[in-house]
Length: 156
Image (cartoon, rainbow, N blue to C red; front, side, top):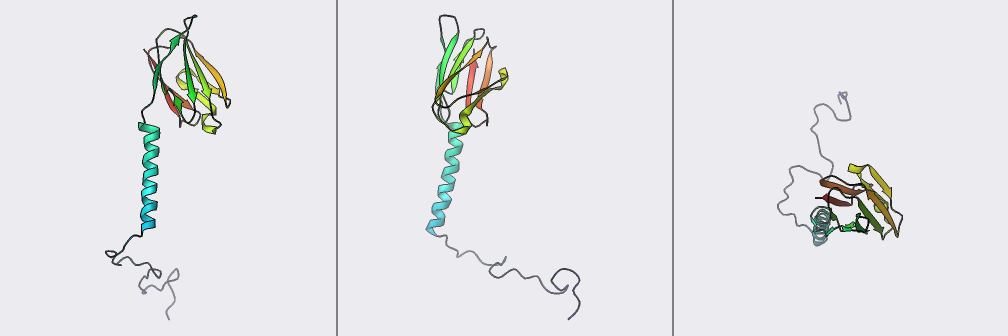
């Protein structure tokens, strides 16, 4: 036998795939079992539901109510998301958002309004107030600390 050039195969030996793996194998007669179809469809359904839940689900909208001190106030329930997810307020008037966190999930433990430089911790099963002094017109994102929960403050 000749000495090997490099590696474990002699230079003139043809490459062989490991047993059971063959690129030229005819797969036209392969039948996928029912359990594999169930797993495939279940996975596709889970991906579709997650995309719908985080990106396309209809969210509730509410307009903030003015208080006696001319502060616009809205209560936002935090439980798997922000409800309502869109809050409408008038421009030029102070806003008070009351976040009522009704869960212990770690994602919802912080609320972020980056346009106003606000990051506030939300204790579980408690109400937390966030004050915004007379915002300008526009749409402002409300997110959790991980940016998984989304809401919008619409100033008109």
